[in-house]
Length: 337
Ligand code: PEP
Ligand code: MN
Image (tube, rainbow, N blue to C red; front, side, top):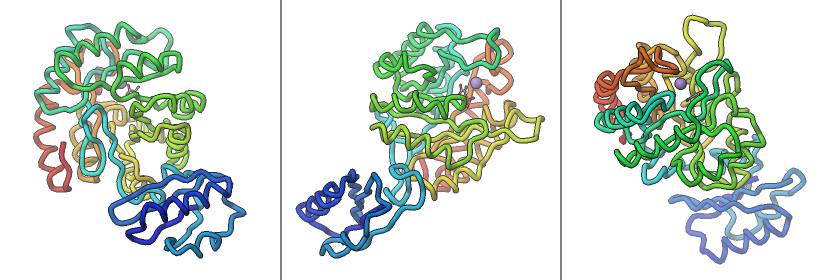
């Protein structure tokens, strides 16, 4: 249930309504926007009569929210959310341009790629240290050593870092060292892991599960938010379809659909979607034109020799060319990075 207050409601009137909400055993979640103030009521609201609040002089209207997601719901927070990733704003007109190798392999590799993507204009550096591989015989990532190399690349370039957390065992270390904690497609519905993320305020990049519906995906964001961490960014990375020519099928409809469902920023990963480096350029442009709040693109200094996902990785020069063109599209849709 949401309670919309009248414009210019004073603090003491707001507090009175909040007390009434709490008196009904509900949690009050206040969002003070430029235009209006909203109180999101969390808890068992089914049997609560909206008229109880409607009679208050400061209340404009009361609405029941049908959707099972509340904190992530656009109705709870009509304006776009902006997530601050160590000084880099994401959402509300600001874009995250995340780039870097699929996996951190060596110090030279990650630093070389980090320097190149920074020079091209990226504002966040990615690199997998813990890798969720389909085969147990494939390269599994360098683990904590990889994380330390990524931190070195951050020191060298000043770029905040993004890397995947697969187990809550490492949450404390990630909280200390990582600027944006990635939860991969395969863990999107690892509810225990999602609940643990409430123990940090670090922003979370929640990738869409391989065959997750929009609602399942937003419900996973809701898990993180309900556990106490509202800094969530969603990332579409392609879904499984009948098509086998491409690795997955990029769902660009996710951008306008999620824009309606939620206030959270939505970014696109065209690398894991198509699985081919030559598809990245056109899909990245389409994503920015469709209003994405950012892109996550795999870049490798030597894709032919990459230990993971070389076939979908751009060379640094191609990435730099792409970013130049993207800045024009971004400007046309009122966005920047
Ligand atoms: C990744 O970004 O490194 C990754 C493994 O992606 P996904 O979880 O989307 O497959
Ligand atoms: Mn990859």
